[in-house]
Length: 375
View (cartoon, rainbow, N blue to C red):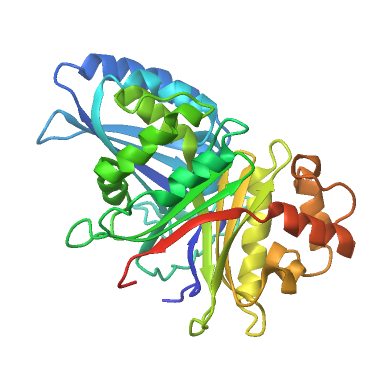
């Protein structure tokens, strides 16, 4: 079987997407759940890119349910699941559901009993999506804003907390936590070996983490009550900044790698396309044995795009590669998608001055970068 090698995660491979949502309902909540599901599925059915969904009930435990949905590709699903519309659509389910687990899979192969069903639709070529070779690491980020004027205090709190125990269980371990700020925006990126959801829940329960979360509460622009399950759920749903692409060079890790985070505010509705551009650029950059980019992860939600990049040397030694605009026409393409005024850069990105200016403005301030001892 062929593989895409260096790309361990991507929402941009063109494959159809299968989303699986496991739910454990409260006793007596079935009818309320079914009513909420009918409302949700009617809304989801009208979303471009949605193909179908199924609701299933366990034949062994009637409180366990399964919702599966199929999408033309990952981007339309991610655009919906990260939207404010999704937050409001699923809110009626919160009081019915005791526990949930969401899983997302690219569809690589399909088998049909009827050969005619297996034929591609007119105008569409059959696509054999390559399997990716994983590195055993799941990546995720959270982003939120704090009240203007509180940035230095928040940075002090976030930099000073005691790290939680890295080992979660026999198969799951928190490998790295990288925290950055850009103005009043905070981005916390985590790398987990094993089960991401298990790790995130473990970390959230640790006293040292709860203490720092409570300490920053007064400074948040979006109010939250961590003692209220619904309030906490909505906050972290809105704060989710999913990884949409990860690539690493297919060569030994060089000494002296430095991690940087770059913030790219997109024009309204252009976040996914901007993330796609950076993902493709980093694929090319990681394949260049003489380039500074060793690996990158692109995170995207709505019009927020953050690129976590591991490079050799100084960030400003090669501004074009550091920004991901190497190649003919790529700077102009980024200019078309980027909300320049929002980051303080207006005018052509094909000038050296504006490229350097953008790099300076996009570079996020590192707050803390912690790696477990045996990583």
